[in-house]
Length: 369
Image 1 (tube, rainbow, N blue to C red):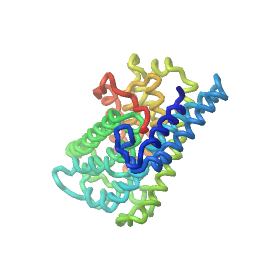
Image 2: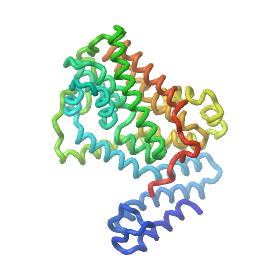
Image 3: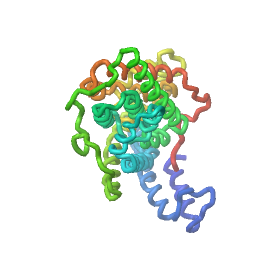
């Protein structure tokens, strides 16, 4: 039975239940079966229809295989793209940069722990986190908490957790969160030790006027946005991540059609001692956007990539993006850049090899639906 047939059967099942039915076979989030089935199933139905068309009209061709993979992946992931954009917009409203500034300026014993957690819940990517860290450091705040925030921020945020859960399941989402916490803590307390022994300046002051301008102005602290701005922010985030997810799904579909599972298992599989270093190296050319790389990794895992190698890719990728390396070097100097790369790459190699993924780990759940 094709996936399109499964969708048809499930749509019929949803619409056959009375209004307000809360039986276990119904969507637990359903308020009205006809309304939600139309919203949830119409895009999925059309996408699986397109996949079946490719299967029937282009059998045995690379074009057909790419089309099947592209439309089926999109059918399984489109809901999570919307959910992640909603999480990002909400996090941006509840945790604006002005509030980030206030939290990072606190001089408490647990400041490194607090800054690490703040990095995980903030919606900022590396490029947006750099101006925040630079501005706080220029005000004279001690470096360790700010470094913990700067190192943890690109590894996890609410939207990225949603995307990872929707694509690869709760095990990988949890692994990314825990490793991000560990790297943030190592960065914060490691910076403290390096300062104590004179290997880093006691106050890491960025070079003036070298940090990038980010959306919304010159990087000055922003006021609490109004709730009326939330739809605009959601639309902006959705447009951004949709672009990268589409590119990622296309690359994943091409990979599934053109690469053999034997090749993937040889390079990135459990039998290769170089699987984790190879995944770290792949992060340099392939990691462009945290959400956009997820479909690629999903396909690679299906073809034999180990979860440990995938985790190493997710850690090293943000650190080795060319614009991240260039901006960090320009703003903070080479010594801090080397420290950043060392923590990220060594953390990727370590966690990729030792993180205790279960042997029977579900490599991804089939679909939200």
